[in-house]
Image (cartoon, rainbow, N blue to C red):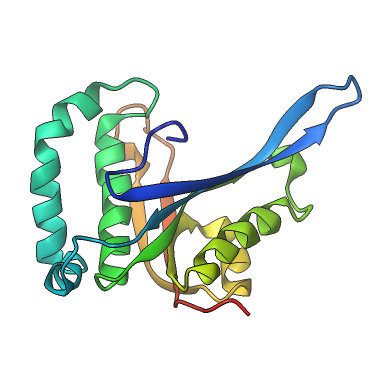
Length: 190
């Protein structure tokens, strides 16, 4: 999903962590992408509606015309799990925003061989600075392994989404994956 452009009206802030290997080559060891959504819909009424279930459903109907194309795109994973899991997370995040502007983490990844070295914290702090400079709330759907990091920076776990992987082709015997849905109110940087 890193190469997919943001939806109309949104911008991205991306950061990568790079290390220099002994042979002089660079290796990307971490990456974070933040979606910045401001000026949603224009009118105050529209902004209020966008945080509701009805607003979410209307947005889904508008996307229906593009559905066939996105389901056949290569490189973005299984369309059914993308629709169910990512769509489920997006729906919960949309409700958390309350129709107000936000910054959304989408995604934060650290190479397993470089974890527990502060790289994830550095990437997360970078995006929080963007949110704080604009006085925007932060929302994210993350792995349960990252929850402690997110809570350290003021995010509160609001919900979760559990997915039975065996319900999807190729997921037999893989168990359940849980995503935490987190929110941090808007703050103003000092």
